Length: 297
Image (cartoon, rainbow, N blue to C red; front, top):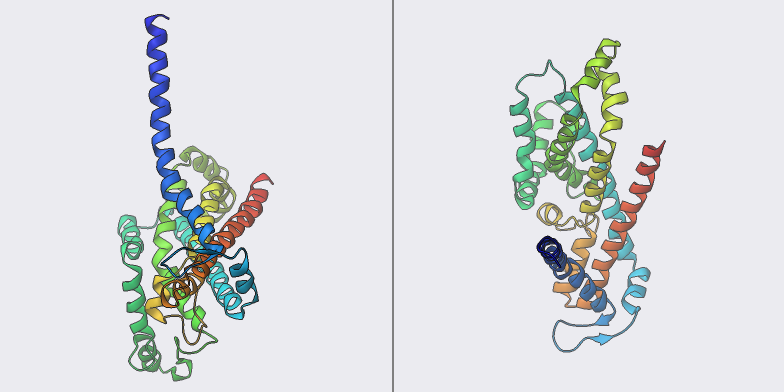
């Protein structure tokens, strides 16, 4: 074996080692906890002592529970509303940022992105003050403009509480998806837009027929991240309503916390956590299927 072959072999070993280290880290951080959660979901465990294996008993209890399906419905509703609101508004803003007539673009980007860096609990408490039925800014404003009939118990009315709590979540994360979509738009060659302008394409047509198809993959990533991330929403709801009134605004993550730490049923809590993962994967798969089909067309 000559010197060059030895060097190539050492380089290959080094490459494999560099790949192996983050792979082992991923297994330890992601796969191992997931496996432990799945195992505990098949047991009855109070957090101390040895877990007692009960098979699918925890999942059977969840399926038969009306509360589980109620909080699942709440979570799916929030996921749908937040995905449409966050990604939809972010897409519109990203299109507007491409307009040449728009001035102070850097300032607008900074202002829109600022809520993203705020704590979710802080955002929740701020909006709780805005929604307060006695001294909240929203009801005071409605009364000031002469629309007292629009005043509502925004966080105490079961019929509207989910819509109310979704607004702060949408507001906070618009800037995140705006940045992702603007990065994708900035990667589009300007020659394409210039040729479209020569052919007489307006700003709207350029956005629909040029920009949107060319950032479709980035848009798909945003939708998957938003829909899957909202499935584990917790902080905003704790600060705003703590799941009330009743369970009208409770999410699966709050339901999981309740069983795990309030009732001390770690096995049931793990089963709910696995259910959240399954729902998130199913939603991501459906989005991938639908948006992948649109891309192929």
